[in-house]
Amino acid sequence: MALDPTTISFTTSADHNTNNTDGSPKVKQYRLQLYESGQLRKEASLGKPAATAGAMVTVSIERTLYGLGVGPFSYRVGAEGSTGAVTWGGWAADTITRSGSTGVPAAPGQPTVS
Image 1 (cartoon, rainbow, N blue to C red):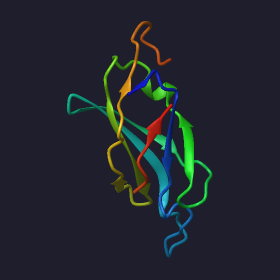
Image 2 (image 1 turned 30 degrees about the vertical axis):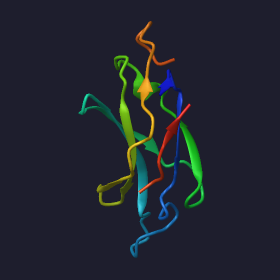
Image 3 (image 1 turned 180 degrees about the horizontal axis):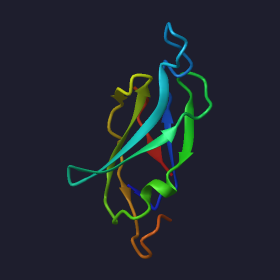
Image 4 (image 1 turned 180 degrees about the vertical axis):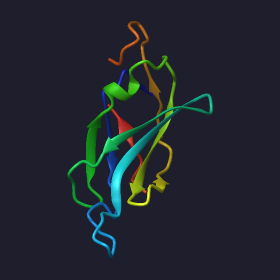
């Protein structure tokens, strides 16, 4: 369990720097899904961090967590292609939990939070 995380780390898609035949990138962005009790609570863009294919990247999730309850939340990261289709990676091994004291937040590889 990660308590009040501020970042998420994940391994980029093998197609991170690959282009389609029309020159558009195969991976447009990465997306994060947060589930609570089996229900999707929030989905957000993580952008497309600069990295080499298969590299570990870390991005901020503070704004994504704003306004959510204390959890715990299960989560996963997916790679969105140029057509808008998302290939979801596996579920993270841990969960996100927030202290909830203020209501503000204190396929890719398997993500982790810190």
